[in-house]
Amino acid sequence: MTGTASPAPLRIVLADDERMVRTALRAILAAEPDLEVVGEAATGAEAVSVVRELRPDVVLMDVRMPEVDGIRATEQILRDMEGPPRIVVVTTFENDAYVYEALRAGASGFLLKRAEAEALVQAVRLVARSDSLLFPASVRALAEAYARAESARPPWVARLTGRESEVLRQMAAGLTNAEIARRMEVGPATVKTHVAAVLAKTGARDRTQAVIAAYEAGFIRNS
Image (cartoon, rainbow, N blue to C red):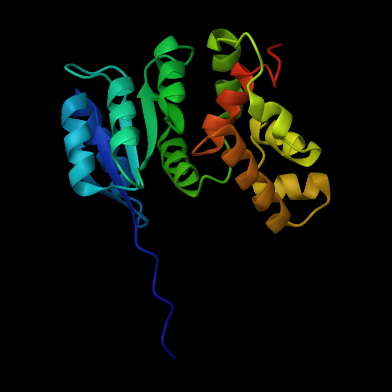
């Protein structure tokens, strides 16, 4: 009997101006059979070039780097590439305006440099799956601190159905599709359809961008 082939490992690029940080991240990720570090960059400009060449699945991007910082590098990668990777910004400080700007620029989440190895590995896998929000409480805290509420609600808010509105609120709480399905007493496929509709109506490429848009539209109220 022929065995089932293992899925290809997630391909990762590391972008950080500190060699020791890159070395530590590489060592942690290399220990996982489903993860593969395929490239490194020491500046934001180099990160853009390396990502364009190697087309990884996930990029771990230092938010503060010389030449081009992580925010601008994230913008360039997401703007210029077709089918761009998921980008996770890596930062020293959790409650950082730079991190929020990176999320607004299109990053799918953020990670603290002091995070435990297991948290790093799980964050990469979670962002690649895009099945739930990475560290929802931290994203919520950043949005409450830095979201710039729009003067008028954008048109997409009125276009959401009741079910889609509920799904967006559950996404902001960090629930997975399966958890949302149980809470709403519907099937996972129905939730996937609602999530896709939310992303389309908000113009977001992933859950993080939809949640950021919800805060800035005033759809989710800051506490």
